[in-house]
Length: 336
Image (cartoon, rainbow, N blue to C red; front, top):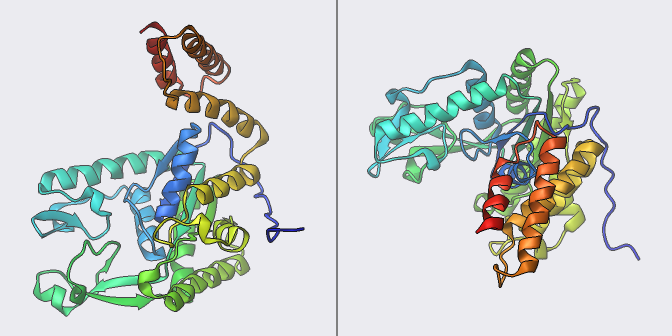
């Protein structure tokens, strides 16, 4: 008996290799996949602006990395005793204007340097809704018509909420992809749609929002804009299709779901050699997390010695991958 809806996933024209750089930008689901790839020691940089949901915010951020934009005090605003950026996640916010600006520009420079050598740009889109500042925000000292990536819990009256048109998203994404390919003509773009339900928008509104993203991506394919679509959304919504695979809030996929999506991504988008290396890396990484009941036993010291040998072997076989953390850990643990 068949218990899951089969989903055929077409592989991209090129596959990810371990030495290639991956820049991931987009929703919180991006970070689940990015952390998984980072743990397997792929060269990853994820969300230099923090979590972003809409195509407008995602595309602005990517353009800023390409252009090496430097943010100034004029790009910040003061609210509830903290400095914030309308373009950035609240993880950059600070009670110090200088600290906020330094964190943003440090991340910006890192993203600019990284994108110069990026082999894969992976974008996860979460919502078609965008937000603009209103007249009430203008009276508070913020300019009208300015699109924002994060509302930073400012008063709701400061914003107008708009559902972007398919045509707007097609233009934004096509311009962004063109700018990236101009910088990195031999690189590749992967686009996914986040399976996270934006239930605050309303169930119907969330579905309409996702539907516009799908339509925009279809239009891009019809225009022969080069990118690869990976069906993360379909894997959770259509294949797993059960609330057992969601967190307690019933909208965010849980560890089991994100692990399944990462497994499928590895299987279809990563080369065979890189997957085999990743399997060995996972053994070492998992061993580092092991906490023995009796750390002073001979059997545990033997275990540490075996893991140290494995890490050394992997470092010799794959000098482009950094195992210094694992080597230091097992070396210190085995003699302590």
